[in-house]
Image (cartoon, rainbow, N blue to C red; front, side, top):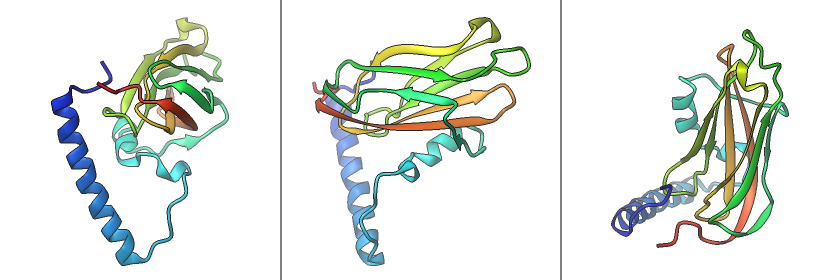
Length: 160
């Protein structure tokens, strides 16, 4: 499943704490102002790996619909819709859902063909903590669309 075993979680937390301390040290040295949560917080290295190095474009053609606040991180509802003619020459190939605050970044991937009729999916995902969620859509012309939303979950969906 999307959550790690206790042994793996310990390793991950230790690594995360180390990365955090290194990042904090760098921020103090640079006298950087506190970061604000924007699309620039997206896990760009991982996104560029998924896109083969192509920069995704923020677009209102890609709608990531999730509640802003949700009580339970185990079952957060999500609907993704990509505006597309879904023709042979112009369609959505796939959509990845990324949750940087989860133990594993990629929460889900959905694949589409012109036969899908529309690029729309509704499901529920687990969220380990309040965080930005990203949807990355790959179009048939090789371009990528990116959407983000903030979800405040009250209980950890990845607790042992």
